[in-house]
Length: 555
Image (cartoon, rainbow, N blue to C red):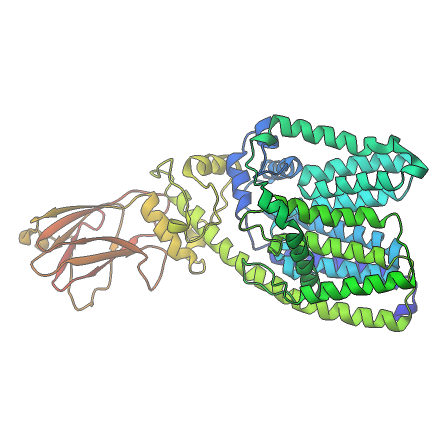
């Protein structure tokens, strides 16, 4: 039987790690930079202390910024594949270290099940598929490594624990929870190893305070009495959300939060079960308290700095929440022995938990894929309009169709493109892109170039309509559109109602760009600047109750 083979858990672990790597790379390969990653790309282009040490919101992300800048400098900005591969490696490292930790506490099979749950945690898809969230994965990997080093109870382990605390904190605020755990470990073991080990925590604390004095104090903070008083409820919500996530019972929308409804009764039941287990086998290992410190500080620190959008049930917080739940569970099961029947039940339960998580991972991928199309289309449009776009032109939710392009302003974006290459579609790629990418690319182009209409009322000239370069657009729709090239195009409207104008370029079957309507008995000049895609003309669509003439068509 597989369960009786001594090497089976290790072989299955290897298979799980390979499967997770293939899955994450296959999904991430078609994605691109998203949301906060653009803030780093646009605002931290220089190699300076300010770029590396300035807080991101209120977080220290010096190692993450260092990694992202190195990867962009070496491999360019054409895609985020290097960043995605680094993130995948971080996720695999965190999972493998979790296996080592849980194996020491509860055995290889339980370690395998816990590792698989973390590897395929689809409810935390923002972390698994969004490389910017390496601050969770890398911090967790270094943090678990630190806990393993502390278990050595020797000088070398303490040195490595200190180094790993610095790495964990350097990647993100999740590392602070592991620094607190190290302090708890020193306190728990002071009778056998003394207080001289405090340097493990003091050195990272001094460096963190030095960063705070130099840069961190400038960040906006949200510590309020209300947040402190509400922190126990926040922590309960966080634990319940973590349990709902790991069991696959927590559902969410593409950018919503995990529903902890199932997690709350499960949390209460598990706490009751843990209390019952303590009546049977009283006492916990010394390693229990540092892990508990990780969990409590993780949720309490988040609660103290709460603002809308940082709910305990937020998708990006589920990775850390589930990792804490698994670590605590491993400690509660430390030194328990499990029969083959129990292990088979645990294996089946793990499979049932993973299935809905994979479905959530697919939904998350679909959401990020849509954002990738918009991102590459919108930035590709700026590339096309680079000759005439205003330096202060910015991609916003209103003109780009997505709020995820943070601080993408022409004055920052185009120099980055010159230095690192473009993240956008080429004109040929844009022409074949999915909707709504082509729709919003037309909108961005119309404003970035920009298109302009100059109207002269009473400027209708009947003789002008007889010119050879004029196209008559009758009101019956028999001429749905007129190609318009760069330059100046004249539009002549005779007596009747007003003429409504709309344009498209890469879009098909629709006209995303609405131009000002022209009154009767008027003429207008439509000015289309030259750009980097002359082989793709604009198309003008006219709706009017009378015949309208389009002359010059960009001549």
